[in-house]
Length: 379
Ligand SMILES: *[C@@H]1O[C@H](CO)[C@@H](O)[C@H](O)[C@H]1NC(C)=O
Ligand SMILES: *[C@@H]1O[C@H](CO)[C@@H](O)[C@H](O)[C@H]1NC(C)=O
Ligand SMILES: [Zn+2]
Ligand SMILES: [Zn+2]
Image (cartoon, rainbow, N blue to C red):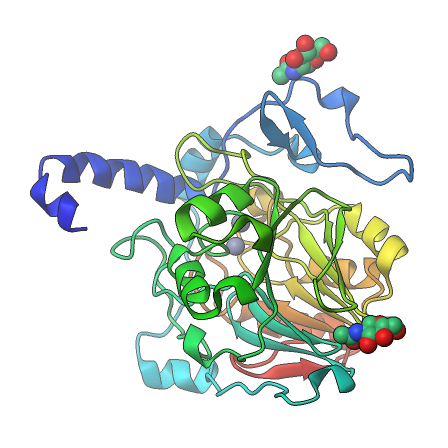
C-alpha cells in the first residue's frame, strides 16, 4: 500500500482496473468454447474429467452461459432485494455469531465422529474421524484483491486463525475466487502452522501457495478431479471431485486454475465440501463413487438473478438436488449470510432451504439445515 501512495498517478488507473476485476468477479466472460461438441471428456469409469483447451480449463456445463455483454445490459435493471440491515443490533438478532468449539486433544483419533462448524461464508472447519480440515478459509474484512475495495463482510467470522484448533491437519480450497482463496487468511495459517499443515488445492493453485504464501512444496497437494491422496499420518483419504464453476483472480487468468469440490473419506465417516457451484450431473457421479456422505457442506446463497447466476451458483432448490445426488445423510447450508455478492433477500437462502427440506418427504427438516455462524452440525 505504501508504494501505491508514492505513485499517486497510478492510483486512478489501478482503481479502474480493480473496478473491472470486481465487476467481473461476480460475472463471467463471454469466452466461447468452439469444440464443445467433443465434450464432455470422461475416463474409463465414465466419470467427467477436467479438460484443458488452449491452457484454460473448460467448464462444459457452462457452455451456454450468457456473455458479459448481456450481464452488463441486464444486471443494472435488477432490483436489489437484499435488504441487509444497517444496524448491528438487527444483524446480531437475525444472524448471531457464536463462539465455536472443537473436539480437543488428547485422544482425537480415538473419537470417531463427524462434525462441521460454520465459520461464515463458505468457511467450514470439518472434524472427520479425528482429523481437522479447514475449507475455503476467509477471515478478512473484504473478499477482494485489496482490503480497501470489494465486497465487505456484514457478519464477522466465528473466530480468528489464532483461535482455530491447535491440531488442524489440512486446508482444502475449492477455487481461486477471492471469497474462497484469501491471501491474508492463507498467510496467517502459514505463519501459525507452517509445515504442520497440508494444503489440498485445485490444479494451478499450488503455485500460488508456494510462491505467494511460502508453503513448502511437500505440503502442497495440487490435484485434478478424481485424484485421491491420503492425508499423511492418518487413514483419511482426500479426493478432489467435480463441481460446476470457474476461476479468476486477475484480468487475464480466467480458468487458468481448476475448480471443484472435496470428498473427505475417513475410515468411519465421509464429508463433502461443495465450495461454490452451479448445478450439474457430476454430483450423481460423486454420490455413486463415494456416497453416501455422512455430512455435506453445500452452498445455498448468491443465486439471484437466476438467468445469469444459475450457471455458477445453485439456488436452494438445486442445493436440495445436490444433497440427494450425493446421498448425503445430513447437509449444512453455506455460502450465505456473510458477504453481499448478489441481490436476493439476505435471509432468503436460510428460509428457503428450511421450507424446501421440511416439505420434501425424501429430505426432511433435520437432513438439510443451516446453523448460526460459529455453530456446529453433527452427524
Ligand atoms: C479445437 O479442435 C481443433 C481440432 O481438433 C484443435 O486444432 C483446436 O486447438 C481445438 N481448440 C480450439 C480452441 O479451437
Ligand atoms: C490407521 O489404520 C491402521 C490399520 O487399521 C491402524 O493400525 C492405525 O492406528 C490407524 N492410524 C490412525 C492414525 O488412526
Ligand atoms: Zn466462485
Ligand atoms: Zn463464492
